[in-house]
Image (tube, rainbow, N blue to C red):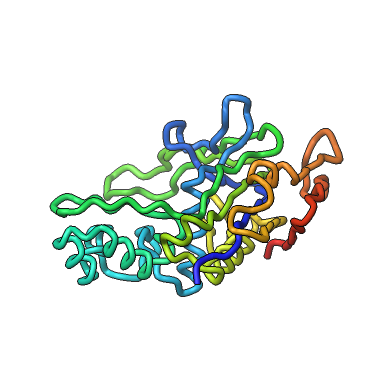
Length: 280
């Protein structure tokens, strides 16, 4: 059964001495907007959710190369390996193609996907019910930059020594928040269920588990709170904008240095209780 009630959610997380989302157009420095507030793109957040779903054993279409659990070298190869999809493509049956893709891959029925590959006779665009905003920090972030060098030679040569490799950048400390919604009308089209919504919620609670890298060491990023609003109808009692505004994040000091300096409050919305989960 597809999703019965509209869902809104919010996630509050902290960053300490890590680069939550590097900007390739700015030397891989942590992303910032023009006012100096830190950002994590919605694409980056969906990547982490996909990774957590994959860790939980879900079938994922858009897998990152370093985490893929099959031998396919591209999305087209992964799609072509599904014989039912190839038949639907040759028959130019876009509805059947969409149904098979959504049944096969959890991320496709959650976030949607565009299937438009060279050589295919059919182009299919799927809109997913789960929408996510970019994460934005609660205050302008301070970025520290450190020059790094290598201690060995990359190639054999007579000369030995340390050659400069580049720079590493990190956010000293920041608290970020992002919002999202799950649309029931789109859920009906993709077959997204209440069980899928529960999987998304668990992925959000454990968002940064198994996500370590040199830019994000274990423990440097952590989910503080996940707020989950489940409406009592398909269309919902309130707009997503009003629900998201119900989350109030108050700084107890003028300079945020710890997650303990943050006060998380929720304005009461009549008939719409919020469930609050601590991050793991």
